[in-house]
Length: 437
Image 1 (spheres, rainbow, N blue to C red):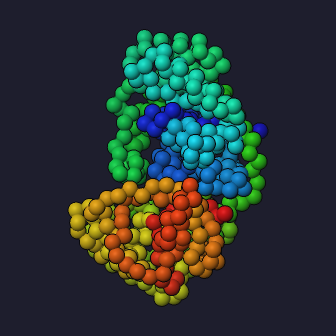
Image 2 (image 1 turned 30 degrees about the horizontal axis):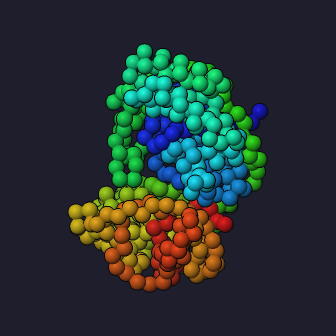
Image 3 (image 1 turned 45 degrees about the horizontal axis):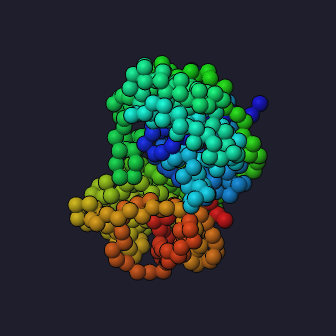
């Protein structure tokens, strides 16, 4: 029998779905179940927490940015050796591009056939919570809301009142249980979301504590029984992005942590070898690598250390000298530039391989999906090769010239112009690529 899955969603961001997802993953894993996880849409931080909770890699499923064959191949990878898949939604259940909610959690539910479990924040509500749940349940006919978890209840009496209202209004939706409000279930945040999983020394204790609280408040057997096999046929290999080379050195540390597991898995399935290195530890990329990938992350938080470390920069220059491809996304793009100005106004010397200066001195949010076309032939493809991806950062380019790497539009087809830089075998941009078109 194939793995069964369900989606943990909510009416809005901030309802507690990430914390509940982590607690469920930890609880299911420590009970001996072969549990896997996924995250709807473009997100690096939550899947890293998923992996810490379950003990296995978490993959993104993006119904806007991914072709159906990429979704299916990624799903097959998630299902391998798993009996249960818990997929966390994004934002509110129906939130996506435009009024139709393209790319939303609801769209993923419709594509996969996975039922939805709503995390309903009932703080300050009683019977009204049932009306919210009813609205969610009847908004689209092609998805099924199978259960609800009442979150942030104030007392046993509060939980009883909301449960009774939900059961009377929606008898076919299982009330799985209730979780009390607790400061113990809150985690530290920064400008791109939660502080990274690998930065939190107390994470294992938090996950165990959250799992214990959830176990006391929920009917886990009912939750597991709601899961269903996916209706999305899974076959083939992940072929989202072409491998940059046969031996790809990938930066991997606190400054460069935002590499999609699905992209790396696709490169491995295509026969490429992935070789990790840490610029923060002043490690150079492998001398035999024919490509180097600097993913996004938080170089601005470690800019002083990166500026002082010379071995990794010499290693990049040596790679360019032997003709290797060097590609950077967002934080990696900034690190390939001439200099990075941090939030305090201090400038830090970067690798100097691209003619660009970036700055956090005047923060401005750049956020959204992107339609992308290559401006010229590169290892990413010929001129005009198309991709979908996203942008999420607060940095700005304050200087530089050179040849553009991409031409971009937003998800509503508005022209955003040229973006990124290329210089010989070195290229990069603020955009995170997810899949080819």
